[in-house]
Image 1 (cartoon, rainbow, N blue to C red):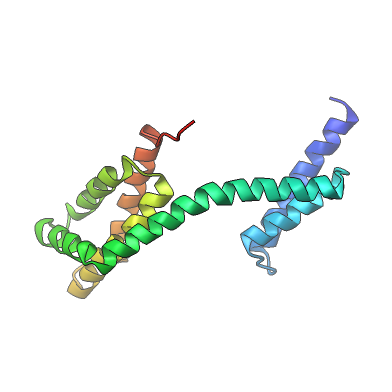
Image 2: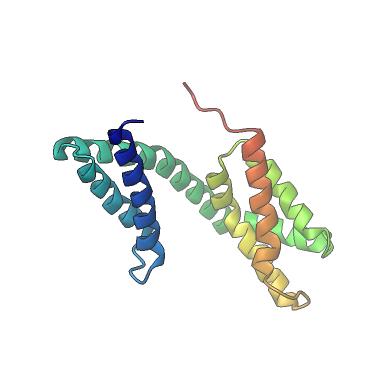
Length: 174
């Protein structure tokens, strides 16, 4: 390792520590803004030309936000359509009426497994959020459950979506 490599490692370590400090300290900077500030700082610390730094940041953020943002936005629209048309309400009624208290998390996980087959994790979660909220509200109205109903039905959905995304990542066109 030459001194330049050690300097880059030190800058990388310092940037991670600064990023965490900006997000969790009293400053409580928004994570995206903190990431941008740290990226500019790292670029300047590594003596990257300003024009190249700006181009690199806009290209990287643009590609990431363009692909992920579009997919998540379309998923949010689909979730809103399902909620507005009453589909979410009818599915939540069916799940709550036909699944006992102990089976309910498994039923929610099964729904998430099915939804998670063709979708990315983020999109599946955005689509299923109205269902999670609807089922949790119904459980809270019953008042028979201790603890958060949102956690009771949300964690199995998140676990099932993560498992499906890990086993069957959606294929992107090449």
